[in-house]
Length: 385
Ligand code: SF4
Image 1 (cartoon, protein in one colour):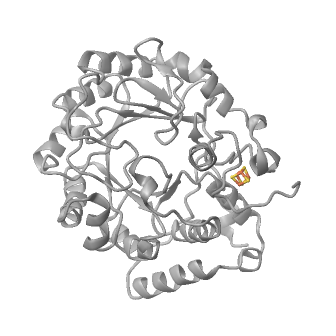
Image 2 (cartoon, helix red, strand yellow):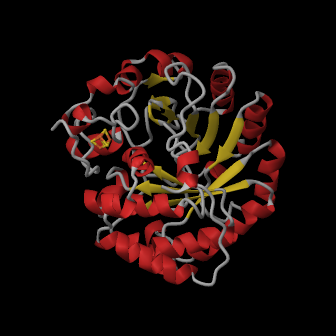
């Protein structure tokens, strides 16, 4: 085993009790959006909902999030498109004044201008995430439902960096775009992204029309992602078993023998080698995944104030209009149930990795209708089954 792997912790644990406070809170500030993405979780709509949390309610929510104390949760304003809200810079500045680290996840539309980004940076925003779902215009524009968005997205990557904020890129992987991952990786290296977040399609909202990967293909992609995370920081979203895989790889004395690549991984590796030949790339230790998941350090608040353990899991835990978010996170039945690894069923319930993995509860619910069932997107067969 090489020294780098020995020195690096395979999974990063939170420095605080996840039962007490989240690590990250995603607030869907609006569901309005000019795009019509084919995998949209939110089934985004063109006009803002009059029942959205207004500026004052939003600020009360931020006060409440800040009251968790230090270390304060990271806050991400998502949508829809956050730029549909005229008070976006005001909310960003207010959250920042409370000591919250605020990031944004806007859509690439004509509202995403250099001036708008500068205004957000001046309001205190730390990072912006942009979606790139294909290496080619045809793939990305088809996902987004609007021709020309691909070219605008590449310009947006530069604009975020030029505005002085950290750049995260989000890519939703499906059976239709998986072979483009090596070329997207190459673009991530050129764009010098701070984080590449790869989402594994959860079949909810408009995403039900797309084809997700099989569990064995997903295993191949996760191994490839772990390997290329020495080139660019990578995060796997709605693929909790990436943590299991990171642990297994760290314990392995013979990676190729223990985890022989399947056909998809061989294709991804060959394409990566071809694309990176001649490119100057710096290697660092593989980025260790964080022990954070639905209700376990993570919470989602929708545009009208309903609280969920994930944006992909329609199990409402309460409303911030009726009960403080701090209480919902700590005490609601939804959140406490999902934090209990002994409540899990199927393979996840019997799995030796259930305390660090536990499966994606969103994937389990979307595919079986039972939020506590095994996660069908994981190929692992626990030793005790
Ligand atoms: S069986 Fe469940 S708990 Fe075990 S690694 Fe797979 S998803 Fe995680």
